[in-house]
Length: 119
Image (cartoon, rainbow, N blue to C red; front, top):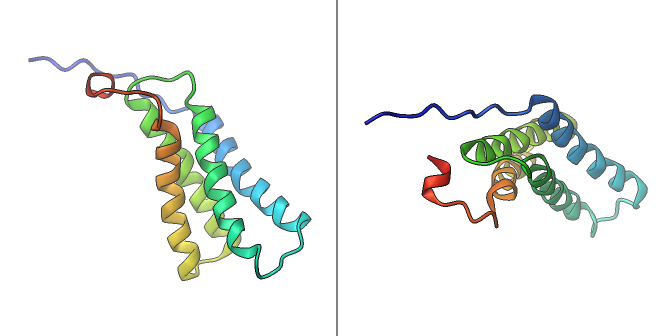
């Protein structure tokens, strides 16, 4: 049994741009809209949705295992930038974990990948 090496190069520039963009757009929306008590939880949700969308865009021309790896990289980048901007509070750390998962989910969901495509 032989294993064929998979080309799984993650585009570093696109990942950094997507992660940074998701967090900065979230912060820009928070600055434009008045920060009231009702809109504050939506800021984290917006960052999660933007991260999933950014991961989907970055991985649109990719196939195989690199899709999940790139989504993980986008989610992790967005989470780290969010923690640096927002602080290390308990809620921020929980949102960072959800952001990482959203990056992978945004990249992989709806693609119809099978086990043969990933391995």
